[in-house]
Figure 1 (cartoon, rainbow, N blue to C red):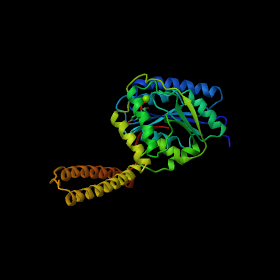
Figure 2: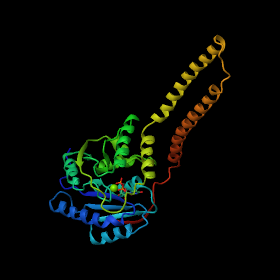
Figure 3: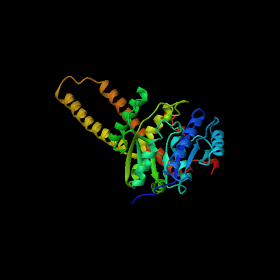
Figure 4: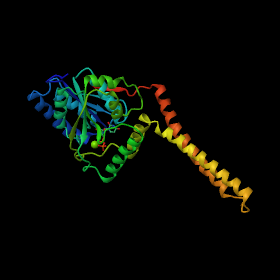
Length: 319
Ligand code: UDP
Ligand code: MG
């Protein structure tokens, strides 16, 4: 099955305190849209959808201003900061049914937006999902590159199927988007969920630039929370590890117990041991707390899932 030659495209950009880059992002993307429309690549009803993730700066007033200058600009403002994944979800929900396909991209346009055309080509060939894969990580500092790459390896070890060097830059057909929105989970790790959809998937390679203005909105705390979300939402291996560690310790303690009996009955150097009493206490205490902690993390997730709280509230909308 092939798709429309001239689809209505919706590009969704989550923005958190992006007043410094937004003007440039808007100008570049709006011009790019004009170019794509002129060349008959997308329909003129295509939209650029900004999601203001509860910013405290001028982000929302800029978006409103852009929407008066260009008919392609639409957007919404969340009532408070919910994080990148939820902001993206809000945008995806808003454009669903209003477009033939959607692309998500960061508001700082670090990802080369010109790859959108390549994504559209694959879409037109009939692909429902097109993943943007970054060519290299040269624009990242050592820390970001190292943590990102170790993370992919860790995810792999945990049995989670994610695409190497693919972030949230991707195209989804309206059908794939609809399937995506059927996932009701509160703890959201979008790239993992997209993998679960199936449907014909293609890849497109693109370059990453350095952020041109403003700072990264992913603080270390947000990054760690995101990484942990990815593992605990898609893998139960941490729970299995507890069982394995517990089993190994059990075997070890039987061995140690036999050794103690042997020392008591068959040798004369049974020292009333401090170490043999106190060390295992610390050891077991540590392991038990670790195990409880991991179980607690999963129970915490169950807790947030069963509450079924709304992901976000929309404060204002430009439709
Ligand atoms: N972002 C968001 N809410 C947040 C944090 C980030 O919507 O709480 C957006 C941000 O505005 C940007 C995208 O998520 O469009 C990626 O963030 P950023 O570029 O700061 O991350 P980095 O590229 O440094 O990983
Ligand atoms: Mg960025």
